[in-house]
Amino acid sequence: MSNVQNTELVTQIKELITFILNQIITHPEELSLTEEIGDNSIAITVKANKEDRGQIIGKKGNMIRSIRAIVRSVASKAKVRTIINMID
Image 1 (cartoon, rainbow, N blue to C red):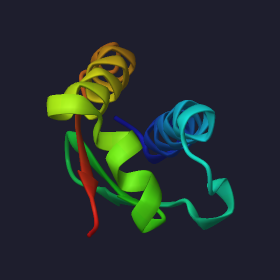
Image 2: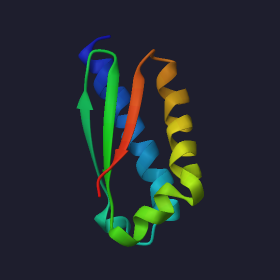
Image 3: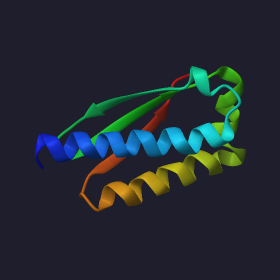
């Protein structure tokens, strides 16, 4: 995968995650995403307001699991593995 495709995919994934999270959190101004790009993987770290973390994780982890599934389906077209982590 070339760097251009990789950069474009990372941008798309970050925009997708930001869009989804902005719909469910109350402090979108405190949301930040950072990425680490590996050979065939992209790790996204989400940092949000303490009050919003529960909304992002959801009951029994269902919300974050759903977000991961959506992002994984987008990235699978490019055969890239995605990892989404939360910072406490």
